[in-house]
Length: 74
Image (cartoon, rainbow, N blue to C red; front, side, top):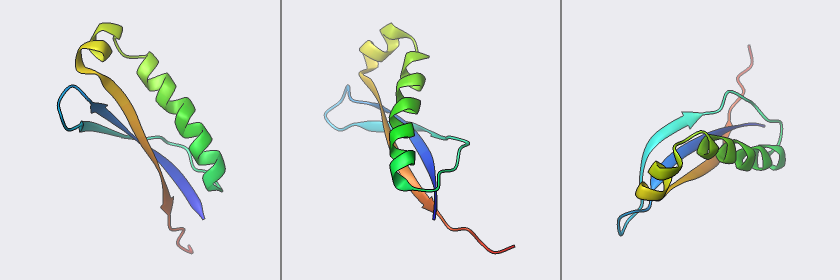
């Protein structure tokens, strides 16, 4: 099995969180463990690249998912 990371930029400024941006990280992982650890690193890096005031104003956070991808025989 292979896994990829999908990052979602979400705002928690309303009653219900709204996720409005999706980014697929261009890395593949052979196992869930490595994927999930890298997901936290990628989430941190992505948030750190955003404007501090905008993060605070919109109450931004990153949600991520390690998605299993099917490898087809070629």
